[in-house]
Image (cartoon, rainbow, N blue to C red):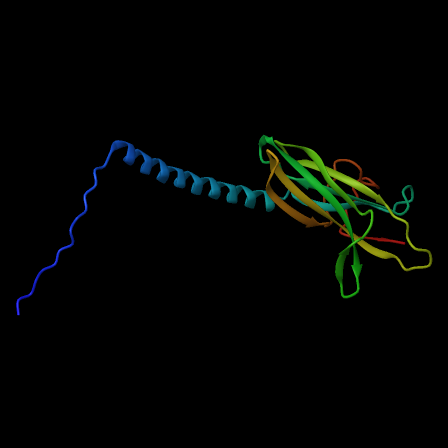
Length: 185
């Protein structure tokens, strides 16, 4: 029995310079998209792990502001003045089972613009509470939600609970006060 050798036929198509350039542009575009995505990931990591990203309670029912809790946040800039930074402040209370739950009414600021992202920014707000008579004090903390935006699009976002040991530029009462939580009531 004779064996036959089967060879695939090569298909030849004419290659034009325009075709080569189109393929090169597509490959370059994919490479730039990969580099751009990688750069965005590195930048997001740097922002989210910065020592300048924090939240603190800077007012906890002092004598001159009874039943007031102030929350302050700090966020690092991206270095790009065309990007903008926003914060949203909310209060949480310590519920049974050591779970933190959002205070249901009037304890969220909504989004507040804190400035262009050229440099680190701080922002804050205070909540005037009405503790229930005859009830034990309630332990509260703050959470600050952070967003870096450009052209109406959220580039990076994060949320940080309040921690102690931060320096508020303004608003702390007494001056220099920084706490993770606050008992009111």
